[in-house]
Length: 337
Image (cartoon, rainbow, N blue to C red; front, side, top):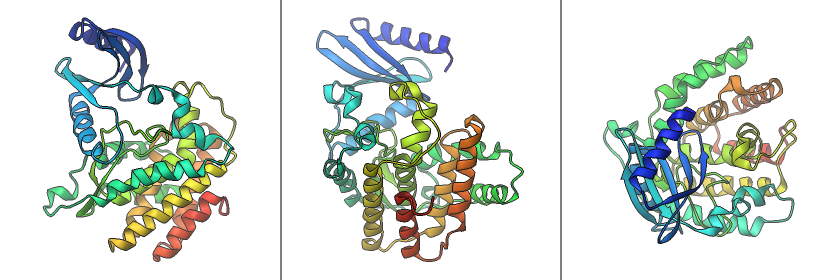
């Protein structure tokens, strides 16, 4: 949205909720978020498309059966395209320093609390549904938002590196023709260190649904690895208290421990449910690395880092499950970079 569009939408909220006062506003990529106050007190609000807000409401309903989440207090249609959702205000969520991101970046040993949060995250995986129809093989909001709708980001990458270009082409072909798993697990949908809270509270439920576990895994992996530790904050500074970054120099020990734990949990879940799709992990991970931020927005050093990482991941032996899980663990531990 442009600045004028943002102002127009905020004015619509003021008209729709005339007894409310907007206390703070943050403009994110696909939504407007903030805090407002009315006679009953403070509330979080989120403005986005009508579909996004409906998804947020339905996702919260599913996810709150397993984990602590802000309660939905109401949704209001603003115009033909946008709606606003009001959520319970929780001070612990409002405080940036209570996000999982903050303690992952801290050099103090926070492994115990991180594992407790992640165990809460993984408990929803016990809920499963089987999808049978051909339409269900591609009809999934998480896939459409984080993969299909970002295909053009890879198509726009210009490179003279023939190996890198061939990997991009193979990845584009795979993502464009993907078939989702028939067994879907109830997952958060956008698992990130900014959506998880040290008070074991979860936020942002737009993609919470019965999702493909392999897509969920690569989103989780990149969000907790270089994406969430370095690239997201570097190129979205306002969301991270304007933290400044030099070039990538590795991840913290807390992140290494959390990622190795997540890899072991995913390996265990796949084994218990007798599911495996190494090809999907390979191409979806490469796609995720290349698509979360537009490649042309990266500086020269970050472009090289990303290209080198993609070529490294592509070079692995992708035939054996055990080798793949081991390589992912070695990658985050720093053995392969």
